[in-house]
Image (cartoon, rainbow over all chains, first blue to last red):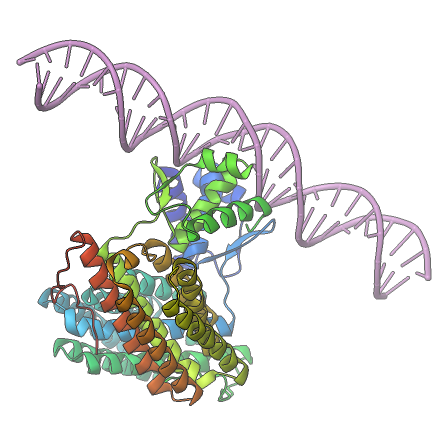
Length: 248
Length: 248
DNA sequence: GTTGAGTTCAATGTATACAATAGTATCCCT
DNA sequence: AGGGATACTATTGTATACATTGAACTCAAC
């Protein structure tokens, strides 16, 4: 389809979900949206359906649509999908990258480095955090571009966006001290540098391994945070089962 | 949504695509389908949209829907996605499998063994080939079930179905001598046995490796067949570029 | 006070009429 | 005859009215 009004509705709703204006769980009623966007319910329903396929929206028959909300299980599964795809993709990127791909990756990496420094220095962190998240996605997507597999790239971007929306970073700030967060960002940056180096060196095995470590680390970190949030800010360690899903 | 009529239309069309009744490229007009299914165009359009998300249908604005047709590039990308997901999944399966999962995998394996023997003995092969393809999917899906990641399982099933429809096995029979095909099926069966053994032994590294080899082998085989078909049955070897996308 | 059936209603699912458009056929001009 | 602009038409996209249904609410019985 990709017709005008359907696209307008799709982009409108998608943007509001990605920006956080529509929070997870919020119900999306076709009539309200139609009035806001100034089109009829039909293209709105099409848009919602496409957003459902993207994994950003949940639709139940006769009940309606709402911004997707994830359970811990699903979040973990999403992360694991990312791990499988991105580590494989990093290997391909090391093999198939051009110089121009490499520059693109380097560019995102530099931007993250700059932002990380700013973040550590700053006291008002919120806007910088948003930028950093965007550059993080740019870094990972640049790698998938270098892998020369459009399907894989699309899928990974999709998973990134799902994770950003559904999990976002609502609790991180409230749960971690600034010093911890700074340390965290430094670790991420260092990992990214390792990945970059392996790809630059055209070493597929190393690139794959580095990406695998990076994402597994990220997963462990996030799962710890979630479990803390769920148990009401009182920190508790994850059980072995909850940390499972490690293949190497 | 998941409302009655939409589901009816979805299942109706999906079935016909998967059974091959609607060939790749065939146009799917909403009015015709609506009349066949005895519903209005609205649920038919919904169904087509969902099938597009599944990757079985292509929709262009103001032109309409048609059964998906793949280019070589996209086929290769799909295969590579499968490689990434299934090898990772095989590793997880080796870790997370229960005894009951193992029985399920073994069951599919035994069925394939039986069918392969029948196939080699038979002269009328077509119906057996279909059954074999189904059991192959069952084998791979059983492994993903054992991996305990529903998202990954769903995604892999999706990719299997896409490959079956779009590529199917239309040319295989016409391009290969029976002896070659028999040999091929024996190789596949042997590979499956290796994968099974690794999972049974709870050896994630081996399971991953075996699955990787199996799928890479499958990809190489298919790409060779496609290139033959495209160059008009006259066999030619693939160029290194066409065989690329190997990460290990 | 709690449970249960019955009723109401708000939101979705469906059908259909109308509008917009891509592709095709026609026709004219060179 | 060939090429290009134009008109036509078939099919899709959109709007809207109507049907259906899940969930909330009422109220009576226990």
